[in-house]
Length: 251
Image (cartoon, rainbow, N blue to C red):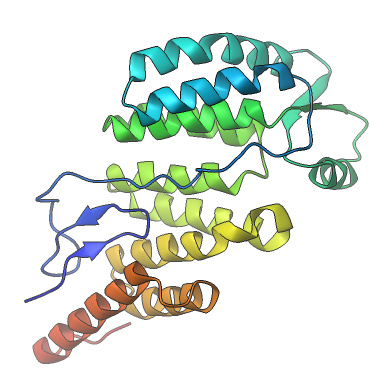
C-alpha cells in the first residue's frame, strides 16, 4: 500500500499514482512564518503590536476579528505604497534595504516601510489558506510580495495556496523563488529546507520523480532527519517501483 503524499507544510494529498487524485481528506496547513518581527524598523513600526494581536486572533480561529484588526494597518501600508514618484517597500533589515537600493539605482526614491506591512498581508494570506479560500489567499500574498520583495515566507505561503488550487507549476515557481531568496539573503536562510520540500512536492505532482527526489535530498542536507522529507522519499520510492513494474520509465 502506498504511503500518503504529504507536503512539508502539512498539505496532505492521498495518491495512488501520478498525477495525484483528488484529496480524500481536508488539507491541513502548518504555517511557514511563525517568527518574531525583525528588529530593524521602518515607517509604520507603531503598528507592530496591532499586527501581533491580529496574528494571535488568526491562530485562535477568530478570522473576522483578525481582518478587522488588520484594517488600519492595511490602510496605512497601502497609502504609503501609493504615494506617487517613489517606491515604498518593506524590508526586514537595513542590509536588505541597502541591497535593494544598490540593485535599483534608477533615480526613483525608495522609502523603507516596516516589515510589519509585508507581514500583515502574509498573515491574511495564511488566514485565507486556513479558510480554504486560496484565490483570496493568492491576492493577499501577491500583494505581500509586491510590498516585501525579499520575504521568502510569503512565497512559501503562496506555494501552499497554489497547491490548494492544484496549480502545480505555479506552486513550483513560488517555491523556487522562495529558495532563491533564502540562498541570497541570510535573513531567510532558515526557509531553504521548507522551500526545497515544496519544490520536491510540486515536482512529484508534475510527475518528475527524479527532481522530486533530488529536492528532498537537498532539503535533508539542511534539515537532517526531517520526517516529512523522509516520508516523501519513501513515497517516491514506491511510485518508482510501481512505474518499473508497469514498464513506465522514470524521468
